[in-house]
Length: 437
Image (cartoon, rainbow, N blue to C red; front, side, top):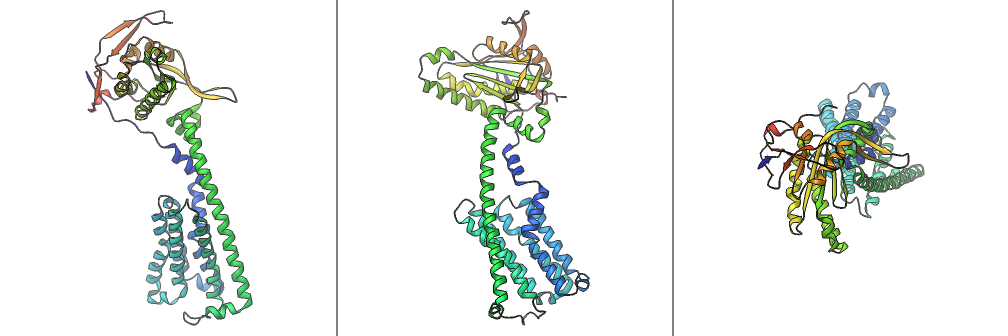
């Protein structure tokens, strides 16, 4: 018989969530980008212009508002996309000068380019853009701190440039020469202090970058350990909606799977051979279960237990995993038996204050285990409750009556034999009913 398989449901990558939390909220990233990069030149230039020229005259012009708006738009772009790639950082740093040049030229015409400040905006923006692009390209090399320090020195040099530009109200081509400017001892002191400030800021920034990379690496390691304990879906849930992990009564489908003849087979194999088979067995389980809405699964020697939201998903996963595992076990003349039951469980975090774990408790779990214990090699035993919970017309199998240990009354089950396989069709009849909790 052939049954249809709907497309597996993927699970969001929890690593991206934890790393995103480590970088801070969108609002915090926006403020940081404003203060340390995109609005540094615009705010400094507006402040110097307002002090040099009469504030009333200067702010009656549209230029300061165009400049600040261009910087804010650049901030919005970089705070959202800068971490995506180094090219976003390179192009994003040019948004401010591009928008300011367009707006300023529309407002003032060719006279806009008579001011040295407008060329300087382009120069500083392009230099910082290139340095940030390089910083992203060589993030893990020893040169990266040098690039970070250089970037911060260039940024603080904006203050020195503005001091040089606005010390006298001179036309474009009548500013003091560089030599004349530095001949003044006061200017030398100011230059030294500004460069020292940039160097200190660069060293602090480089240390922060190193610390952030270390934190990100640690987050990834903890994320991997937590995923081993909770499973990917529950870990994602713990980060987005922790209240869902509290003990609650729910309807779940429980799957148990065990290798038939494994104990006898193990007696005649070395521990290394047993471990090799189990590792291959676990890899197949992970690959198949990750493609379905598995809430959590546990592995213990040759036994696997999985929690699914509905019987249809559990049955489809069982048929698929059997077809993938059987070629591995056929070589050793082994096979798996699977049991599936659907019903109420208490689900959530169990344990004491110091040790807690996520599990499901209830007769539903016990019944699924009992079904698995009597399933023969290659069989999937589905309880009557689980079979009746799927849509009618999806599976047409004759029921059987079995007796299991621990149950007073016989159980009606549906046997999916070794000849049951899945096809790539996707009929609507095999879709699971939505679960209402």
